[in-house]
Length: 102
Image 1 (spheres, helix red, strand yellow):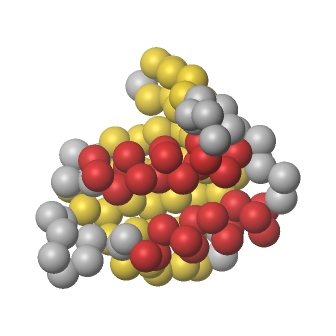
Image 2 (spheres, one colour):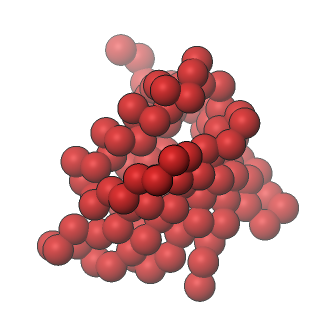
């Protein structure tokens, strides 16, 4: 089953967003093609696939397999870098932001 989500946030530039997504290659295998970033599990991880496509105002994400740990890291990375992130899935939405004091 594929989960489809829209992550909406303000990124200062597409170049910065690409840089942030590339940083996730430290925790998952990355195959990059234009505005699409496809992440898959490393050999020691449960199998998953997460495709992130850069769109105006954020990214669209398709996820399959045991992707929950990676999705958590993606949310943490986006909220740390960009602040509030709106996530929409199947007609529902939730706003998340990193509110930890630094």
